Length: 505
Picture: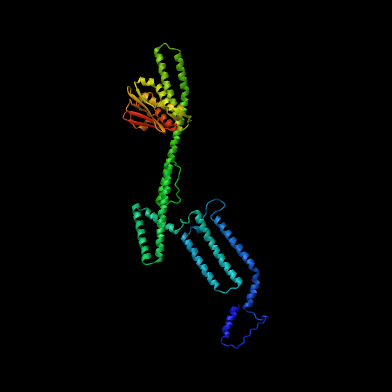
């Protein structure tokens, strides 16, 4: 105040001279009322409320923040369900909604400057500022909660005018061929790039440079999005290829052709899943049917065999009756073997089988099996050429099941090999595995592929005059597989060869 006062005093006294006296007197009773008196009166009235006002402002600000957080969490939700509910205001196009809020903010700013140009007393100023703040805060919270609801519902981009233009453009382009769409999109982007580059680099327009950078960013984002979408689709294809038929490629972030392709992949997975379920159900029904029927056949078949034995013990005098009993016994034994094969095949296919894995001398097992079939081979004049290791070859396998595998292979040779031919049995070992093979010349012409011969009820004798059931190779293959080995059938004209491989113990 002194600086302000004496500054003007110096200016006033400069024209009077040096020998002058300036007197100042103050009436301490202050008889006159002026601006200072009024200011002092207002100060004395409002000063006690200063600290209360500061505390109120801080508390109000904290309450505003808490309210804003609560509205952020509660926006779009109610007590009935967990879904996000939108209001009518949320359906306004996003860009237009932002534009309305920006225009309103500008109007509030203009109104604030206009109000500030007037002289207000303290209460009037508080009322004006409070009303403007209240109106702007109410509009802000309406705008803010609408944006939050859109983001929670995932429609912020979907309800935008830009997205509408984008989707409409894609729909128009979708009616064109893919090659035409690519050409049109490339030409449009190329022309736009050249135009913006000319505006920025030649005419030095800053807006052209900003739009050029924006175009490059948008093209990069679209390319990156397309790559990400293709990766999602490839992930779905890999999952289905690996057997996860229930996997679904997410469609939320896919668009245009990528979305259609993902929907097609999901449909393929659903179709395959239904087919697999139906086939599994049919196989289970077949297995159950075979098991139940085989079980029902066993009881009367056992009775038939018992009565045949009783009749043979009576030693009928008629030779013809004795022959009848022999034939009946032979056919009954064949029916029993078929029943056991059916039950075994059913258990293997359904996985209802328990393995007792032990160390097996594979060479010794082959020699034992060959000895048991020696009589059958001699009956057909089959010469066995055997080449087996002299030392023991040990594998891990179920003793009863591995014997069944080898027995089925030898039995197959005994039934279907051409008489007066050679049978080659070989075994080779490497550092980690043993390879066993058995080869013979088929008596009947072999039709179809090697894979067909390992199917259930497949037989080399199409006339079905031999006693085979068509299950031997199928059982041998499945047992080999579940014990950790591999089973391979190869055909070379009438040369039939089976090779099985097991890891060394």
